[in-house]
Image (tube, rainbow, N blue to C red):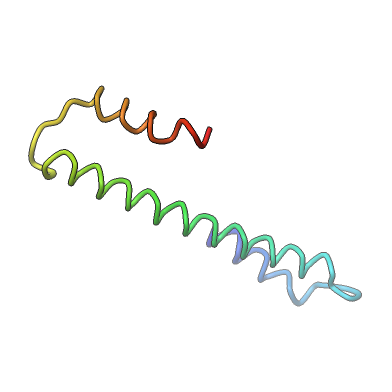
Length: 78
C-alpha cells in the first residue's frame, strides 16, 4: 500500500484539468489503506484470542480443533 500511495502521490503534479480522476484515485487508496488497517487489526485480535484460548504460545494445541472452531465462527459471515 505504501508503494501504491507513493506512486499516486507522485502523479499529483502531473494532473491536468479539474483532477476529478486523481482525487477519486486518492480516495480509493485511502479507503484501501483503512480496509487493510482493519484487516490487520482483526488478524492481530484473532491471533491473540487463539493464543489465549490455546493456553499461551508455549503450549501445544490441536490444530484441527482450532481450525474447526474458526470455521464454525466465520461460517455465518460466508
